[in-house]
Image (cartoon, rainbow, N blue to C red):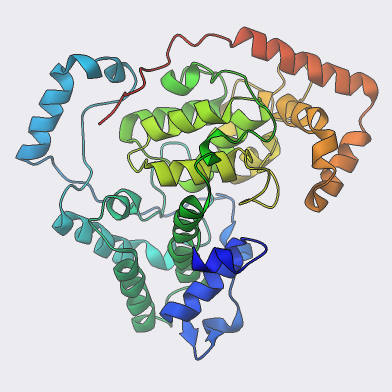
Length: 386
């Protein structure tokens, strides 16, 4: 709150750098280790070639967890949720000792290679190099500072073998985005959850609850969420949130779904990440531009498009990928408001180069898709989960 009240703009990079200095994380005096604050460019490698992916650490449910599972199966008010999520197997940590094991396992087996492919998405790989620590941080089994200290100590002990972009990328996820989002939530007014900059009102497609869609990227990610209640940040932002935004879905319905579907869902987490970053519903208070993308991005950062029903290269044909016609429809529908964003200039210039006929075809494809996906049969009651 104090940090926010002294600034004209609430930029995560400013918050992150101040946090690094304040807690002396990856610092040499008052300068960052390696002479750079940000190694994002090195942390966006697409998943090309054979990846030597590490195993995840999971646990068998203890007696208390088994009792809760049995109660969930029998509770009348939770019967609807069982249509959408796998109650078993439940393999997450439930104690501090187990959470510490996950932290140690991540540092020993994943952190050194975490950075380069942290944005990559691969069919059948549910966790990649990610830490899987967010549920334990959010419920208090782990403290953010102890996680940062453990990671930094491991880097200090292994500098010759570890990539600096990996440790910096991990620190940025916690001391940067996580703590920044928490602070934004505390700073914003009570109306933040109702923001809707683009006035989107389309209902959430039913396949967000079922995974039954021919779009392979959404099918893969939603099926994964149904199985383990988790997807990593790019799956959330650039597949789940991206599609909902360009399709014009109500940001409140999107946030409700995220809150219900994810094991690390908390009010402060989902409001800022979905309303702000994912849907741009706050008009740019968090994100400097909408995180909107066509099938090109999904294809570059994943292998999902290779086996998809739709053609990732087509935007208006019979087999056009919905990410494509919705992307251009989104830009066209909101052209006037997006013109004010200096980061959108080149993208909007590409839109203006499209013929009027193609822009009309894009609009028609988008509208036809919306009309065909009005079904809200699979929406859950207002209290779907524990």
